[in-house]
Amino acid sequence: MKKLLLVAVLFAALVIGAGVVGAQGSVTYNSGFQVQNLGTGTANISIVYYNQDGTVATTVNDTIAVSSSKTYFPIAPAAPFNGSVVISSDQPVVAISNLLGDSPQYGASTNSFSAGATDVSLPLVMRGNSGFDTWFNVQNAGSADASCNVNYVPGSDGTAAVEAKTIKPGAAQTFDQATNTALGTKFVGSAKISCDQPVVASLMQINTSTFKVLMGYNGFTGGSTTVNLPLVMANNSGYYTGIQIQNVGTATTNVTVNYSANTAGAFTPSADACNSLAAGASCTLIQLGGQWTGQYVGSATVTNSASQPLVAIVNQVCPGGLPACSSAVGTASEGFDPSTATNNVSAPLVMANNSGYYTGIQVQNVGGSAVDVTITYGPNSAGAFSPAVDTKTSLGAGESWTVIQTGGAWTGNTYVGSAQITATGPIVALVNEINPSAAGDQFFTYNGFNY
Image (cartoon, rainbow, N blue to C red; front, side, top):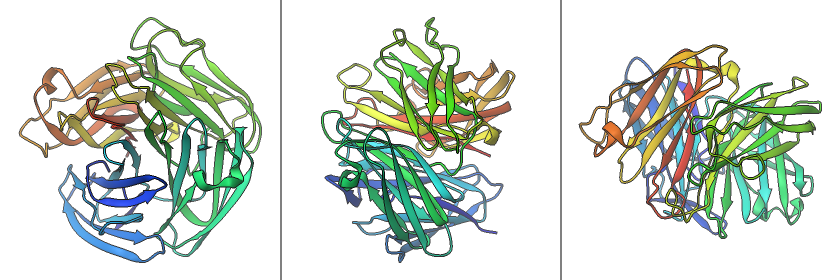
């Protein structure tokens, strides 16, 4: 049986270079995507590209070897293309999509979806927020036309508003907050997408003024009473994070964020809180200023008093002008529902010395007791170097472990491939991709796939 994989391509979508696929506002985007075979045999895949009007732009058939991944860049449709992708396969596959804007100024990454839902939550939506605007694509994962309403919920600023569109099966439509004057001059809040067909969504946060960054995250098709965040930082060579939490339940609740042991020093942060968070509303916690006087690298666990479903994202940023980031860089990732965690996580794209790009893998133990973790790297598509297995014993409950694909045995060796992360208990993981010496925002993050 064919397995369907949805990629809300945001003007198609993975980070590798040229081929214009579309424009949004003043920015022109290029994209590609990486597909990984998680099955036991060769994957026979079909990639269907949809225009926004629901017509098929082109179809590509291909194969991917066992435990391997393949990059699709440039994408198949002729430029300019603004659309979506549906991938079907006779083996289980996953994909990530990397997006470049005004190459090489902006970069962001998002994950594929295996299914949609009639309600999708977006915890952070902005218009005119100190240079930040957002836009998102909603893709119809159903079999009939989808009638969709987007309800915008203001947080610290803005006006409540509703936006409606009809989306053809397989296709995607763009919702651009920069041009949505109904939100007010400045809007900072959240949104809920409600449709009569299952849909998926991916959102981009972009700043085109002095802090030029692009940060992408996927909309949430559900929530959980506990949310795990594998990577949180403060004063980490200029890098820090911001957490955005949305209450997607029906009742007001008090939210608590507990931070794990610090892997970078002695500083111990106190728990943070968002009290009286109303249904549909969101709150922001930034790991900069206030109590964040020391260096911190760790993870966080989000809980709440009224057992309401929550969703959360984490933005990682560095302001630029520093040895660790000569240009301003930023990236985003989604928090994890621990009930979906497994002992196995797939990472479709891992790199070392790849024209300046390398990756870092952050693994969090979301179980109640210590676990042992192993990272095994797949075939190298860029050379003969074969990375050794990485291991971590006794990773504590709620704690995280970082493995960076630079320095040590990686020195001087080029690697482009994938990774399989296994543990003796439930884990989640994210992967950062970065080129610290490149001009612009060459910083990308995607969530590992539990299977």
